[in-house]
Image: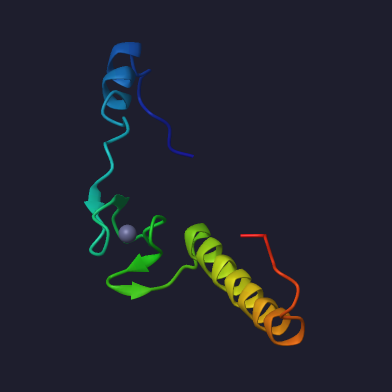
Length: 92
Ligand SMILES: [Zn+2]
């Protein structure tokens, strides 16, 4: 097995490893919401990648849940209004 001719000094070894440091990552901005994101990654703020919706974000789920809740409430209200109109509903 081939071996190095002589020992590498601490100085020479450390000079080589000094150049193996971490480099700052490139930061891009989202096309749709202009949030800072890593390159070639889906935006976690809006869930878009290159203008196409990929992810369903927490905000989207919250919004759709509120919409379904409103629809159910409207349905219940219309049912109560048509069935018992004599009872006044004080809940707002
Ligand atoms: Zn975005």
